[in-house]
Image (cartoon, rainbow, N blue to C red; front, side, top):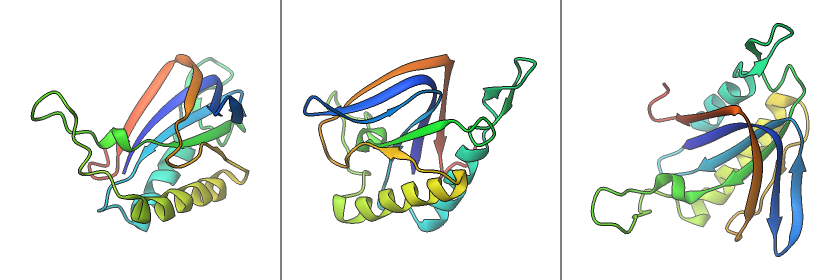
Length: 150
């Protein structure tokens, strides 16, 4: 499972010209799921994201988590995070999980993220053509791969 976590001042997801998710201060999480991902990956990743100290404390130091600042979260599925560009110029997405595997894991990730944060998480729509807007704050962008746990 790969995640791109962006600290945002504002973010929204639009589908067919309709805003389906919108937040102010918080995190935009792009999540890519592969066939080998498990519930253990979800538990580890959601805990890691909820507790990442990437928000400023009273001294302006990145020392607070999204949980502590009561920030909002949008989770968006993005199979292209598993793109392989090793051969040729057309990316291969062979490592990305097929919908029958990915959708239940994506839904579990969202539920687990809500449990970690003790509040509702907004989402895009799995498999939809989404327009994602954001104002990256910092900028702060962190990439986490559960297979590396770095």
